[in-house]
Image 1 (cartoon, rainbow, N blue to C red):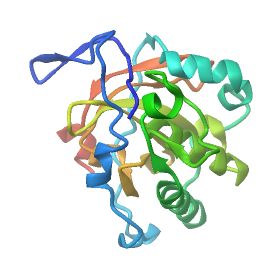
Image 2: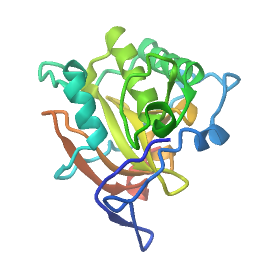
Image 3: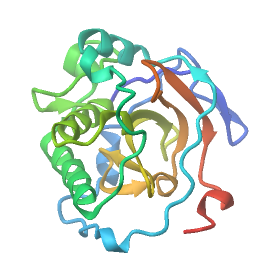
Image 4: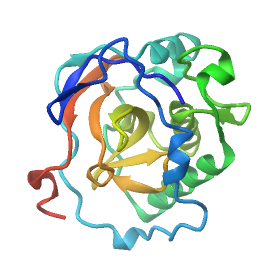
Length: 225
């Protein structure tokens, strides 16, 4: 579990995620929700019509762990404006995304940053086979980039999960909508199927972050599903 820090916003009439409040990443708690290797195969042909993509707002302060990660791994954070913002989702790319999500979820052992590194929050690619939520997603993105998926279309994203706690996922932007890779689910879900509240994500234009304003699924996002 990691502790993700971000500016507060109201959720269901209460203020959640106040700056300086410990928000659990839920890598360990998420095991109770993890759909394992026996999960039903996700067939590309059965994908529903996509909802509207997640809309960004104004600028937002990056996660401190992300800033430190980028200082140590600048190539993992660089924005290449020649890459597409979205990828054309073919059956081959879909199968690759689903496969990488399941494989990394099964390969990495969940452990808190405090137990792993002796610090509250540390973002890194888990080369030692251990990590928490953001580490899973960073490794997935790295593997997908190595297979030719453009990094610019894959965005580290902070959400509030079903437990009301801070969590990190990887959002892949496609011509069929935004899909979420998550250590809590072996299936890749459309963003509006997760039940999460979307707080902020990487920018696609600079080494910066943008606000998502606490968006959740609504009738306008799911009307065409």
